[in-house]
Length: 446
Ligand SMILES: [Zn+2]
Image: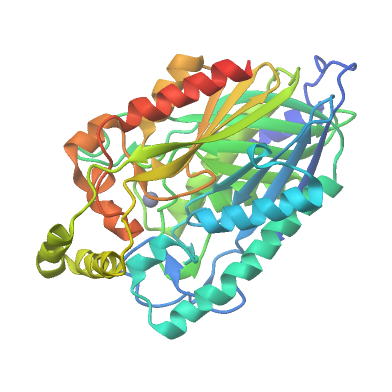
């Protein structure tokens, strides 16, 4: 009952009294545009996220979407954020669609942030992770059919957002939602990040919500069934869009590599988490929010992160006979590459993106399934309350453990690497390399 009254109170603030946008400066005109497209596959495809799944999707709880927000500063610089109800952002997909977006709209790679919710109830993609499913040819053919359709839709949704650009009022704030738990043993005890960064976009008059971008650091793993579903993030986006007809709500996943929604596995719990996150966003939007001021800046660089070692043929022969099922198949694949005269890579080109959203917010977007200590450390170094850290952005190549988790090992530190077809774990020094690059890029962009 208490929660119901709180929601009603929030609606009243939004609808009856108008948004608190009185402090928005008149001199600086920002623009914003939004796009939204259904990306639910037309045929029942294999689903990604859990290695144990053997059946394709049986139906859907709700549609899966890709959403795009184009934001333009007063000097005319445009940045585009894309949010998807997908397991990952395959590197080849990112390359294909960003090249086309640049060709059509002149927007360069650093100005595009590609994110995913990492829902475990979405379609398998044409990426390295699909290796975890051991798909028969007919099922893999469905994945291959879906990928170009998805790519075309992502290019289209960015086009929609750019075509929709018009004057808008932008403001930012940070809320809180508390359902994410640290998932490594002892469960519920380790570090967490419950912040909910919010970018609110009102129309030029400050009367109507046109869109909202919001984040949260927690795996979208409430559900594990064979139904398409955006998990809690899908429910949160639909909750906000239901309450603001015409508005587009875009979720981005924080450093939730070692965070799970607990308890889980019931659809009503999944929906509840979505509602909790939606209400947290509403609460921020109902309060006074500092307007975005100043210019946008964007940078994207890659650092060559080293693997712990490059396996030799002898190492791989041992894995091929003594490893687990996935190890054996991967070892066989890598042995064939060695036999063909190929060299196995010693490093991976890891993407680090830093946006200045005006003078008030530094938005860091990091690739991979990155664990929560990264966001806590980066926010501490770049400034609490003015730093946002998104994970699973621009390329999801595997887990990115903190130095502590890498040393401890376990799923996020080592054993998950095989599902992403990575031959070994990362070399020590990964956390420092990433954080130092973020700090250097942030300093340059000021
Ligand atoms: Zn994951």
